Length: 225
Ligand SMILES: Cc1cc2nc3c(=O)[nH]c(=O)nc-3n(C[C@H](O)[C@H](O)[C@H](O)COP(=O)(O)O)c2cc1C
View 1 (tube, rainbow, N blue to C red):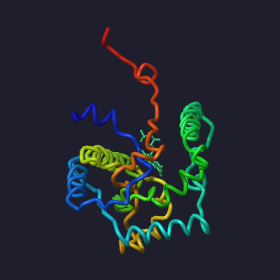
View 2: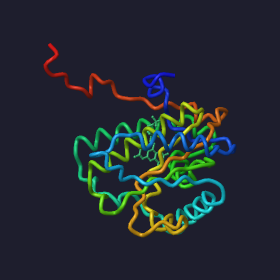
View 3: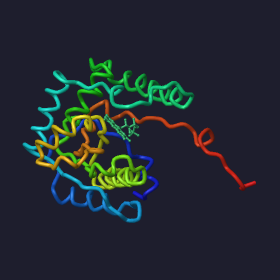
């Protein structure tokens, strides 16, 4: 599969087989992560590959926090001031919700519950990679973009190995508790995670492929005429 085909075929996987992911495969995925570009080649990312009991402990803890100490997203961001851009983003997200609900509802699942609970248990993936950066970089846009490039490399390289992934952002609100389980120092912040495993291709939810706006609506061409 060439790169463009891989990019076009990639999608979030939200149902996994229980089969373990070999360490060798994760090494390749992490090698791809660190091959990403970074601001001034500063490579400020730090990765934790997790499986087995460690991942189970995190999932159990997050499941408990969801019940006892759930922090709604609006308490964490200040993006709620009305704006045309936000409206557009909301329309796209509700389209996503509507389309996914058509698959989830016949399975007896509600979209919001599935996404939230699924996110908090990494959609039962047998492995995960978490990306941490030092707290001093947290407000530094170029460093955060570099992490995004590394994560995308993980998603694409995993796919070439027959693995499925879901980018998991929703658990960063519990960085403190995750750090404690993993024995990570207090000055490291969780910025992204990836759920990784072999896709369960029998699950209807993995049949879903989200749409995109046309580049005609998103791109301005200058100087081409
Ligand atoms: C920064 C970021 C955070 C994300 N966090 C989550 C998450 O917590 N849970 C989840 O199910 N999907 C999460 N996703 C996946 C998006 O929902 C998904 O990429 C989007 O709906 C497009 O679908 P696709 O990946 O299948 O193309 C995240 C994606 C990004 C880029």
